[in-house]
Length: 482
Ligand SMILES: *[C@@H]1O[C@H](CO)[C@@H](O)[C@H](O)[C@H]1NC(C)=O
Ligand SMILES: *[C@@H]1O[C@H](CO)[C@@H](O)[C@H](O)[C@H]1NC(C)=O
Ligand SMILES: *[C@@H]1O[C@H](CO)[C@@H](O)[C@H](O)[C@H]1NC(C)=O
Ligand SMILES: *[C@@H]1O[C@H](CO)[C@@H](O)[C@H](O)[C@H]1NC(C)=O
Image (cartoon, rainbow, N blue to C red; front, side, top):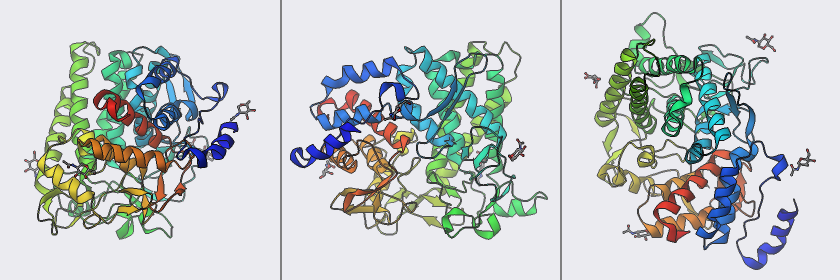
């Protein structure tokens, strides 16, 4: 608290001032000496001391504040990570919250085991409910969203039951990212078998959601997923009695809610499908590598799942290339659409939450110099073509419907910097990001375009981790900008 008071006192004199707001050592939910050493040793990489402070606050924020529970026992590894101000674990958030720590796990055994616990926890969660976006710590109590009318029915363990394709892709991305640094992640008793089962469930869910609305109407069981909530927010429930907007078969896979947890307008969310293509293919590489390590001792026949993941990725990719690109009516250039329905309808916009159109190169789907991506980027970063791109006295950036018109999301600015090749643009992004913290020392969810002190969410760990990741990327690629 002392540093906050001090910051408020000094700020008017020194202009922008980022206070040191890390929790005291004894109050942190997890500590990594390796991460702390990295923070100390990287001090000299910065000319801009505000950036350095902000990096020191944000990079460890997930470890400092959101490791709700963990068990590092190799027989029962388990890690439950909350989003920050909401006491539940999102598959997407928790994956993104820990991605910047991957480079540290080969030298920090406890951090490595913490990540193994998260892979195990996610496998179990997917097996409990592959249509959920967020989970409770356990199933002992009735869930907060028990009143949602849903197919499949809500489980106690499900915190929220919104089906978002990128939640499943996040499970795959976390798994392969941990595997890249620790091939032994699945070697504990039963872990690989359970993980493979979760991968099969993931593939089956994504496959099932390729069905068109007419195919679902004719199948005797009806849609595998429906969702209705009594609410005054149109974006918090699905149209057509919980079935969502009708769509044709495109080979893309439906996604009923966006990564903002808002309902999609049209079911084929192109950025989420792009992320799925990348992660399904990366998962194949993990399984093939495990075969080479003879990690399964030949007990598990993985060839059918390898074929299924490959076929699914190829089909979705073809679907994106066939149905997910449009000629923009204003720019007359070919761009990726945000959402399509396979009947020729499309929505062009972007939402700051990842996966987004702006993030396509960050997700590994296209190169930063891909011509269709560059056309898309130009349209995303323009008030004339993206209804959720805002400019004001506090900066400019992508927002989204979730916090409303005129609210810019720091995450959108971070993604812009991560996907830019223009040093001036990256510098401007860094300046707006520092300013957007409004003396709090942390990243926020969104801020009013004319006044950064009018912001949402004081404790949003994903945005903090993503900023940490940006700074580490810049240390490698553009150290002169720091
Ligand atoms: C840190 O933990 C101590 C002991 O539990 C508590 O009294 C104190 O308020 C905590 N400080 C912060 C900043 O959370
Ligand atoms: C769900 O929560 C209710 C209310 O606490 C409890 O009675 C029930 O046993 C729980 N169900 C499961 C499967 O744990
Ligand atoms: C879907 O993918 C399969 C396999 O790649 C392909 O044969 C088929 O033509 C595709 N269907 C559509 C509607 O694009
Ligand atoms: C780089 O970014 C700056 C600031 O956004 C812009 O003014 C400039 O035109 C860009 N340069 C190129 C080559 O795109």
